[in-house]
Image 1 (cartoon, helix red, strand yellow):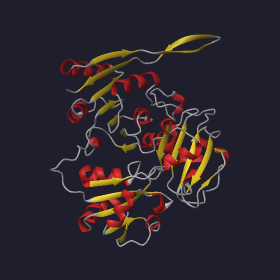
Image 2 (tube, helix red, strand yellow; image 1 turned 90 degrees about the vertical axis):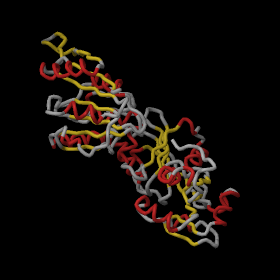
Image 3 (spheres, rainbow, N blue to C red; image 1 turned 45 degrees about the vertical axis):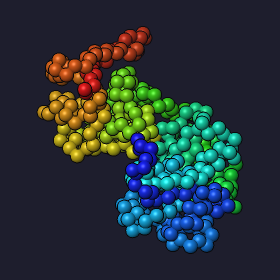
Image 4 (cartoon, one colour; image 1 turned 90 degrees about the horizontal axis):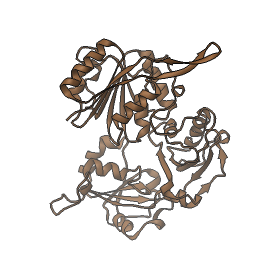
Amino acid sequence: MNSPASTSDPPVQITVVGIGAEGWRSLTEDARDALTEATAIAGSARQLGLLPDLAARQVRLPSPLLEHLDELVREIPGLCVLASGDPTLHGIGATLARRLGAAAVRIVPGVSSVALACARLGWPQHEITVVSLVSQRPEATLAALQPGGRLIVLCRDRHTPPAVARVLTDRGWGASELIVLEQLSGPAERIGRPRQATELTAAAEQDLCLLAITARQGRGAVAGRTAGLPDSAYETDGQVTRRELRALALAVLRPGPGQVLWDIGAGSGSIGIEWMRADPLARAVAIEARPDRACRACRNAAALGVPDLQVITGSAPAALAGLPDPDAVFIGGGLTADGMLPTCWQRLRPGGRLVAHAVTIESETLLHSWQQEHGGELVKVAVSYAEPLGSFTAWRPALAVTQWQVTRP
């Protein structure tokens, strides 16, 4: 978290001004003053075209921005950067503050496109979920869907709305109501009529657009961020952590914003997927030795709304080299591999959580030895499922699983 500015803080290096489609007319006095006094203004061609004739030199923002950011700041002291709407809402303002430090960036926000969309639709902002697809695949929308829930999707371009509609239709959300909103607050503002996802097939007219979604769950649609999705939600060859054990493991692992999970022996990817579904800012790396299973984990991640799950094909612990140190580790396979537990324990951040599953006597003995040395809890989980037995029903037990739950001091 950035500290408040003090007298010892360095001077502001960059000013970020939020501007909407309406352009100069919509800017506050502070925003106009910042632009009028600037010696150089950087923005996209569309944003620069919204300005009147000012004395400042105009600079096109480089792409990708982060790779050229330090050079841009160094070469143009006192630069003023244009951003869309509110620069701290999925915008360049937050990126610059994170990169340069809050004291080096002055942000003059405009009205966000989300606020404008809610105003046009009469939706309360505090009841909606915002999903940005500017740099994500359309499947990322899926994890945020709840029956009756409302989403505002920030679109990459005019082709994003039909792409999202196809994903929703394919995953059982085809009855959801979609509204495309374009060029909000600008002279070309356009708000489309409500349509079901199955009906929205054409691209929007403008690249500057949003998609409003009222979610309607259909047959086979998966909803909810709570751990323990149905096993049927996963494509699997049988190598999947069962629902009950998955929910218990994730309750101990405790996903949180910015937290990194290692899912070792990922199989179908269920632990990493539900870790990322639980918190939009959580990250996970799935490590799987078999290429076919690694590909399957990728498909499951996309189908369940977390296409950014990082999947590594390789055997741990060797495959762990070079990865960011984890805040949580789940070991679902390969527990007895040479060096597995020592490597995971050494790399786990202080306060990090580790959960390991064992089904064999050998792996259970190993967990008992580590529990004696490092503490934590050993839990034996035995689950039975009601299944047909002739014309009757009987309980069929699954393999009992020993779970080690531990927090590193």
